[in-house]
Length: 249
Image 1 (cartoon, rainbow, N blue to C red):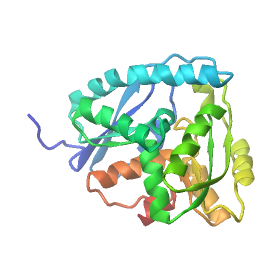
Image 2: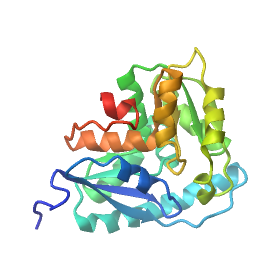
Image 3: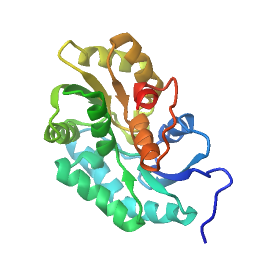
């Protein structure tokens, strides 16, 4: 029987992330607002070595196979909404593929779902951005999927960068100095906004700081999915200091 939760009296968000991911949980804990709690489920995946398109595809296939059990495990705490703390496969297959993935999780859980693909597209539209650039920790094949998804939404992708991290855990080892350089490479007068995808890439605070320097939206995927989840359950609170998205919309 459901009742009011002593801590999550406004809502409980279930957050699903790969078991190798060490960034989503602290990021989303930093974004919490009063009365909304986050409850984490691990999508089991080995810390596979990744060195090319084929091995990155094998990694994302392994994550896809493990998602359903993670969803079922977190449902036992009776959450109100699901936030996907992993992003690559949420972009695959363009708009139709992104919707099919969302529907798959919704069908298992009976809940509405915020994914990285859906959330970042919604965020860009709120900013009115049209020409974008993005970076990821992925390999070229996955970046091509992300680009296709954004282009199907009507955005023009001016540039993209993939960091080609050597394993899932290694994504979290990428330091701000390297990421600042990548943001500088992506920026230009032809870009309205920059998007960071890959939830294990630590860019929540860096994206917020970059907005002040570059004078345009720099959207962290973890901020976007949390924002999307909050708004989906009717929580309109602003979160300050973590980027324009959560401050303005």
